[in-house]
Length: 229
Image (tube, rainbow, N blue to C red; front, side, top):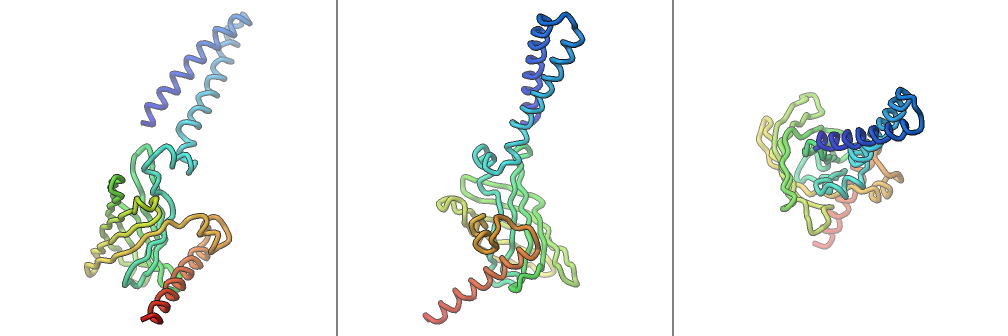
């Protein structure tokens, strides 16, 4: 797709160069000046169009969201695992419109906000019609063992909730095969401002504060349930 757009841009630039050369030749009899000026202007227009059509949609989050339906699940997500030593993960889902591929990378934390694992997707498959995202991943434990674990997972995004929540599971094929279920929630700028007072995560300390916040919230919810029971 990217190559086709470039061909169109080159065609537009060439047409403009020819037209400008004709105009300059009518104004001045200097053919070298005419060719140089028309070429410089055509190249400048080419670069501008290349940025607007190829780079801007990739760099601008709002444009990606509007132009590519696949980008609607992009962003930062908070992953809450059930019955796990790493109860929360921060994960980032990104989409490349030209390769039509996703990356799903994250960091696992313990209840004190300490990093306990890092993981990245190796292969992904998406069916947005049903809100399903499948992936094979590689994870590495951050401990003395530094064990590398392969596994696969499935995310189910709730399309009725504007793709801001979901559920899923992963299967770790490490020393022992384990299956963990989880909930996922989009970590929005509004939520980030609520917890950190800023729009985005920038440091390890920020991530630790976020995890401690969610762990504390979960504990409070559990205490309320126990008091009712």
